[in-house]
Length: 441
Image (cartoon, rainbow, N blue to C red; front, side, top):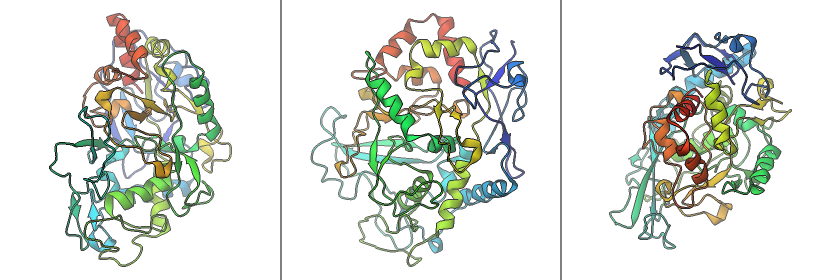
């Protein structure tokens, strides 16, 4: 078998607490080129000399993946911050901690185990028209919203479950990976706006849109990262439909909506059938440090080592996959984590919403109160980070191979239809190369 080439990922700091080594699937037996992916290195240029020579970078061994570790060359203080946050991320919450009155899972890691995908999931529900895609104007069957909250605690008695009505569509969302999310938070707003403008000028179907949302938390957990306050108009970048702008808001939102844990950012219990305004822990359940500790852990998680199939990389660009899965986007020069500031972040996403086919639609209506552009058929481009660590693909894990995930990009009205046609027109060998490239990300 030809040598493998690592690319596009910074070295990582291995912790004593957790060092998961994931054996790579055997990639296509083919000759790999040593040339770097254009814009795919940490600074948008060539990969390291060791990588170009087909040798492992300092965060890997031949054929071995390491995940859930911190980015390289951080201070001992940040290393401690990462470890403390990692520990807190795994902690199960109980009634005495403020769990409930409604919840889905009891810890962050239940949906993002080892910083990867799942195993926990959230179910969504929507009243839809007969086509099972278009949301009905009348959503009154769902007085408590569109999220299923199957568990109760802290005084809660009545879960929120889907009504037994054939017009209600129930869909699932697996907890997405959180690998490399600090890179995504660090990306300049102007970069996202630039890509949106470039796509608007394209002559094909690819016209992604920014999800402009209203900041829902009361404050920032740390003003060094941002100074948003409730009501600010911001660019959404996290969540499967890009409804969250920052990682502290992402954390506070998950605490509130998935565990029923309130914080200074999200101080109110979610609306519930029992009308409870509090739980077994009176007042706000966790302090600001609890939110920031977990948010900092997520910010500091490295992008796993990548394995390059140079032929596949060129084909990925040729069939326009890279139009949406943009290899790199530039980060803020003032981002507080120096290793992530003023670099070309290898995120393989444009952060934009795209119209996809009806098979991927979830029937959820737009929310005009927050200027939410993400409709039933719209999804944010999935960041291709740690793909080879996934066992399932797409937002609900419905397929188990990269090829099947690519094939699901078609359908009536999908912006990816032309790219899918080009993929299908490739020779068998070229399709294998392109798939091997994606599997190595």
